[in-house]
Image (cartoon, helix red, strand yellow):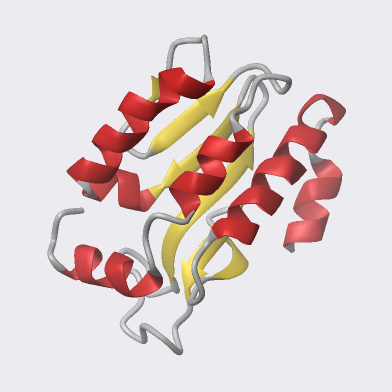
Length: 144
């Protein structure tokens, strides 16, 4: 399945929010990332031509941000926020400036349960805060 096929199969309730999140992230990511399907989700990765070692789990391109439309929520998996305490703190402190709802977040997964209440500007800003080179350096530091 490619990204376009993934989008076509998203439930109508989530499709618009998914498309807007995916577009916002893509427009704000620094140079050096590319979009592909990984682990069943549209994912922005550091391509193998840039980082030939790839992801230690499966040897594929190094994942950075994935977006998934689930049955009950939209999920953004940001590997950098999981590994960078300063980025995590910035996001959790800035979130209330954009949203009145409680942050629903795991280690790397940010979940939104209402497709009409997604902080696109905040997600765009988050996407732009780490370059591919910074992500590789953080990944190689073993903080994963």
